Image 1 (cartoon, rainbow, N blue to C red):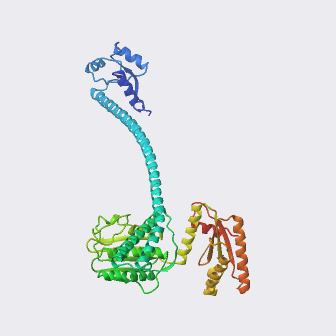
Image 2 (image 1 turned 180 degrees about the vertical axis):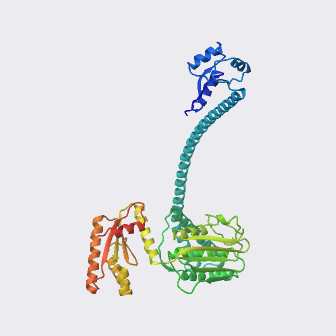
Image 3 (image 1 turned 90 degrees about the vertical axis):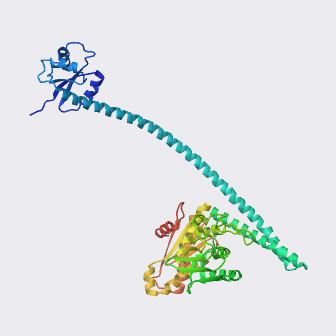
Length: 509
């Protein structure tokens, strides 16, 4: 059976009842025929209701005004098919309406607040954009000033080195009495002058080092280095100083060879800085150098029983011009750059450095460096070459020479295959005419990095390689199974050695 809606005429203020109609516009049980505003419609209620209904059935006239007098007038209407809603029912509708109005007001206020917040957010975003631009501008200016400062330090320091070296040599000649006899008092004064010149030279060298590190221009001459040799040299150098202070200088290193791929002079500088600091701040006990091998790393450490470093100072220990526990008065003075330089050198080698200490008891500064391996040399050499070429904005290519079925040949011929690869590498090096060309090898492949060349040059060089290898195979009467493949790739912006190698392995020539 189809349900019919209840036809209702509303009585109340027109603005109020219009909203009420909106509220029930989707209702399935109520159909609002119209609105009767007694403030405006002063005619007989029956007449007005009939006019509003337009001949349609009127089930109820609902007083939502809350006026009891109007309710009494409604009770006198006899023409309704059904009884009027009770005051309770009308009151319930009014409550619904009031809540609707309250909700609408809340929504309106929320919309207004949202508009204000949106406007404020827009202003905030605009302010952030302006602030970001200002910060970026300031940052660029700071970078420029920092570069000016670094350039200034570099130039001034570099210009001072030559006259200081000349002065030092001249004073040395006088002290050694090459230029004539001097008395003891004169010699003492000149010795003090030379010591101060040497200190000033160390300061200048440190300033040059830190400026290069900050600019990312630290030059590393890497090769296979035995850490034991470095430790031995450092102990030999500092042992007299340690004995004069009544301290024991110990070295705890393994018996076997401990190789790293590093710049020996730079790593020696790090050990020197750490041991010198340890001796400077240790009054009794010992200073010990420890070296141990890990799976892929070498851990080195300098431990002392000195005055230690407070927890508050530890986070700043590797900062420039930082000095902790310095004693005022006579004695050796530092520049506060040694640890900053050491950190820069270690990180430039792909390592890390840390400090542990207990105030008044001990300090241990340790650093990790990658262990030497042919793969490490291979990767780093190519990475450095790629970076240098891209930085200089010159074209660069890589040619990769690979022995086909290397594992099969190795299982068949053993170490003879390794010797063959070494011989082929030597032949490739001898067929290159420029010192700038890089040749490195690992396992089954030899990589040749060529800078400032074009594709035509690379193809000509690769043909030369093929000719040299074929001639070698023929002269040595090697097995027919031994063959080589060549591939090449152009170095592209944002590329590293790994991606360059991958492309060269599939781009055969």
